[in-house]
Image (cartoon, rainbow, N blue to C red; front, side):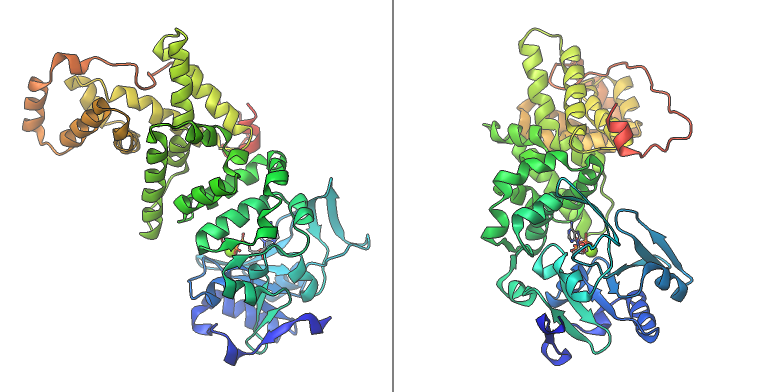
Length: 447
Ligand code: ATP
Ligand code: MG
């Protein structure tokens, strides 16, 4: 089968060892010296060929995970669905995967349930390994034996054409793993590539399969989509391919019915800010992302409740519970994040209470910063919110003396809360059960 490979010699491609991390090079050389095949593969090869800096370096080899472990002391074996070796060099982790086979004669460890791949530990040749990868541009190998690039699936051509093409029959590949649809949108956004027509064609018919994908995996994928540095482009790619409604249905609906464009503006600004922070290596938080993604839905629902005659606090409380619960059925947002989302939303109404005592207390609140940043994003909602955001911005710029004068000048009416945002509400505290980590997404979102 070696013949199916196009071998691009070192002189005809742009990958240089000086752009490969030390850890990855050490793993590649050690495997090679141990008599094994050793290649860089996946996103790293793709990104190096595009002249971008890879996020991480993955290695593929014909050594089994156990053989990898005997070569490296700094190595641990992980994964059940997909067994891998992690070789650790300080802060760098190099993922080493054994070539996967394409067919199962029954002797290996591969399981399909309703066409879905739930386990894949059948080892095989490098050619077979290429075929089970998702997109052609992700199936290129950089061989440490002679520094050539190996291409069995036309990945080099697709890189040149700047397009994502699924390997094999798209229908079958999406049925095996529906998350590949999201990966297509994400990589198209990140690389500014097109999705080749036959690769995008099944989205309409098979998008619904995402409803059956594991919510914990959709949470991970959501973070990659929106907190990976290309969040705004990812949102647009998901919308363009009608995939947003499969993962964030309420958000997609709210964007479609958003006549004045306020919710879109808030969400797009949030994602643009997030992308800028990622570029500057500043921390970003899932809670703020989800607070923005679900703000349109929660606001719509609360307003509908109020129009039906519910009191503002009750309508907001019901809307918050409903929207978070509904979203959790798709995407397992860990509880610590949904609690923070609630807090960011709940603090919005407290910004309206501008008495000295309350304002000073709010400034001390541990979640003040996130809630204030959110208020600033809401400025387009009304002249009142705009004025409120300006006031809080102003307040933070004042020294103690100026602060005292500020409150002497505050009009009494400004201290009255309105119904434009969720009111603080009391709810019984859940007791955390013993022995359960706070981050088990499935168990938590099911409640
Ligand atoms: P990124 O730059 O975002 O890390 P990536 O392509 O490296 O992109 P990873 O999730 O790190 O994405 O996956 C590494 C490689 O594993 C991919 O390039 C691809 O070859 C393979 N892969 C990942 N997910 C799948 C999948 N769902 N189905 C088939 N192959 C996959
Ligand atoms: Mg990667």
